[in-house]
Length: 193
Image (cartoon, rainbow, N blue to C red):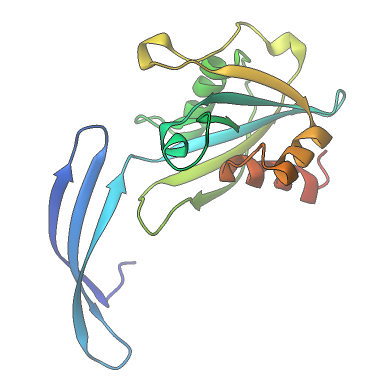
């Protein structure tokens, strides 16, 4: 149901180089009965999905490490970020997307995933909804080395880490990616690992 207190007045595309940056002008009816016009920029990169693969027998999880330019220009000296496997939906449903991304990035072919929740990751400036999944993995599911798609410029390192080690890596700051921290904490809070 649309918010009756908001009226979109104008949308101007500021950039559509990589994704779309819009300047949106809207009016908002305030609690005191007055109306105010505001403008905000919203970055539309589409929706995405993320997954944490876990193995109860070996007490391990699969994560990835790759260069992330925005972190590099905001203080991450190497630009390398440890994170859970993720990708944009690209017109797929979230479940099909995350199965495809898992195989491309990690080399594991999974057939069963569990959606645990969905969340806006940076709602003040980015439109993206991220769909969160978990799935059990085993060594038999490993069909390639992973690493991502070369044609997409991906150069992804696959990491198999003990679950306890990843929790310590959050404390030490070695893992700073919000979606990854949320997934690791989910496994911990729900007693899955």
